[in-house]
Length: 96
Image (cartoon, rainbow, N blue to C red; front, side, top):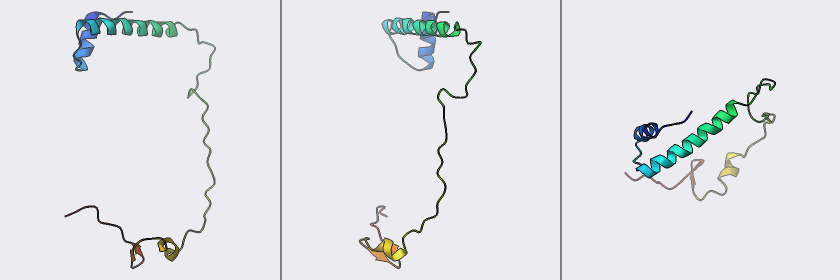
């Protein structure tokens, strides 16, 4: 199977690419080479190969959820530049 220059021109039009004739011919050559590789792959006998759900073996590594004590409010606010009523005060970044 090969792709014609008109097909390349049509795909370029659909992709809204403005290509000159030299670029169209270059893309035709490259696409035909790519299709040739696909034909080579399609010709490989894989009848004895078991299908895999993924190309590489995937294993989820999950850690157990462990509850640990967090900081008390006063400890968390110790290094804050400004606090009020037990809350962090931050600069306003949205002006009215």
